[in-house]
Image (cartoon, rainbow, N blue to C red; front, side):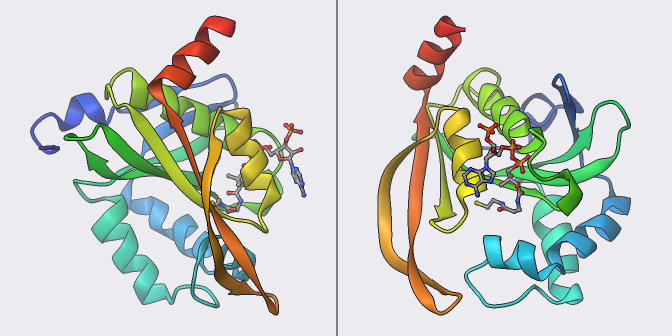
Length: 193
Ligand SMILES: CC(C)(COP(=O)(O)OP(=O)(O)OC[C@H]1O[C@@H](n2cnc3c(N)ncnc32)[C@H](O)[C@@H]1OP(=O)(O)O)[C@@H](O)C(=O)NCCC(=O)NCCS
């Protein structure tokens, strides 16, 4: 998929939901980004490696991927206050197969469990199946992250497989779940309302 020429169309300025607004990242978001990805609990839930990224790695990730041309990243803001609470993204956008991988981090811990993550996920999935005309959105999540698994299930993702004992954390091995939603699943949910 050639992403750069049609970029305005596939990465809109904003995607507006009921309680969150997704906006393109701005360079000043690096400060919040650095705080989120320095948090050991965020690292525990999102990284294969033990411990958070270094400040230099976060900076490289932010400028190279988040602000880059082939990673569709959007900042998650609370709609009422415009507070920046997290980030979500599509990577591996594959036009030949109509698929992508989804990622999300609500970095502000006090914003967890308030419905922002599932709403942002639902907005991105709707964007994938409408504006981007994709067929499949996939993700991976660690077995020990029930909040994330529940948020994804609420948006229509189902578990399609598991990589057994793929991650060693807190003194034991855990599976990594592979979840996906395909266009037909999403359309059926839209009809159900
Ligand atoms: C995962 C994440 C995106 C979810 O977003 P969120 O806004 O916190 O979650 P939501 O409030 O939308 O939904 C969470 C759901 O999980 C449920 N939940 C929370 N803790 C749970 C637990 N321990 N067991 C089972 N369900 C749980 C909530 O009750 C809610 O479901 P409900 O609406 O049916 O009650 C967010 O918490 C986050 O970014 N966490 C840190 C990084 C991370 O884990 N990223 C994902 C990596 S794959």
